[in-house]
Length: 353
Ligand SMILES: [Zn+2]
Image 1 (cartoon, rainbow, N blue to C red):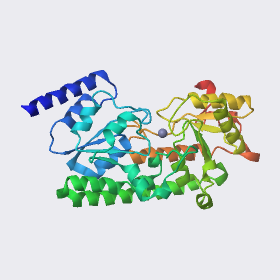
Image 2 (tube, helix red, strand yellow; image 1 turned 180 degrees about the vertical axis):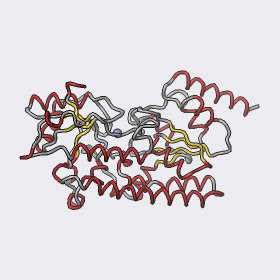
Image 3 (spheres, rainbow, N blue to C red; image 1 turned 135 degrees about the vertical axis):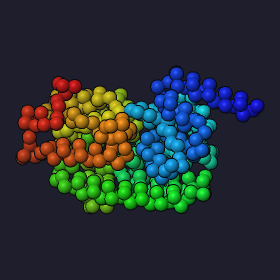
Image 4 (cartoon, rainbow, N blue to C red; image 1 turned 45 degrees about the horizontal axis):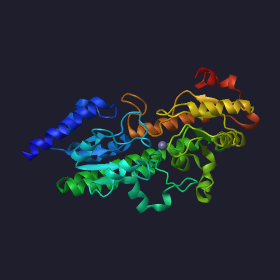
């Protein structure tokens, strides 16, 4: 009887979550996940983690992403219905490093044996690889460097194997294969980005999500040693998106754009363009020629099914392709190109936005 009452409570909670919130999974997907399929129910906070889990777990795992679509993972707070998902999950994977923050998250994630913070584990094992902002906050965007994201695969293998020892060998083999594929793609993308002339490998986006990416793909080996690669990337908004920019925030980026001859600003797929529009306006008033790339980068969210970012590796490949395509045209110094010349070749001015 107890079980029946529990099941009823869970079902009612799920239905309420589905009807009251866009944050829930599609009803069928959630109901399928909630049903007993004889598989390990894994809840991952973001799609980039869910994909790794599915690839390692194969047919033994039924994965569900908590923060779906274009929702900002920094700002997300658990909503009605999420508590049932946490309750039903056999395992929960989250990024950690401050991505999922706030009191609600602490309630769900801390002190739970079944919750694994893959970024936190990375921080414990490789502390020197983790980046911090000026305020001492850890940068959670480790997925933007495939070689770092690949280092989290063993934590998923370990957790699945502990929960389901019978298939441990399969998880290990899947994990090894995934790791190899990720590292091969990492090398390929590194070579592609390094083909862009060194003086053109600078870029600006809306929020501070691409530091790991910049260190991994845009920097020179000397810059990685002396930690001067930071100059190659800047954003007006901090580690968590916040479009309330101060005049100081804007001026700092304008100075950066001028110093490094950056003419192109990249929007992010799941964020408003307000910040970069403000930068374009302020830059014009300061005499700079600025443009906004008309194809956004994927920062904190993968793309929808059928898009160029509908898998984790495609998401990073898309970013490399777009940056390669645009930065190669971002000619600087004596050879500077005007906005008129490159307009119509994949760029748009603010007047079209
Ligand atoms: Zn972010």
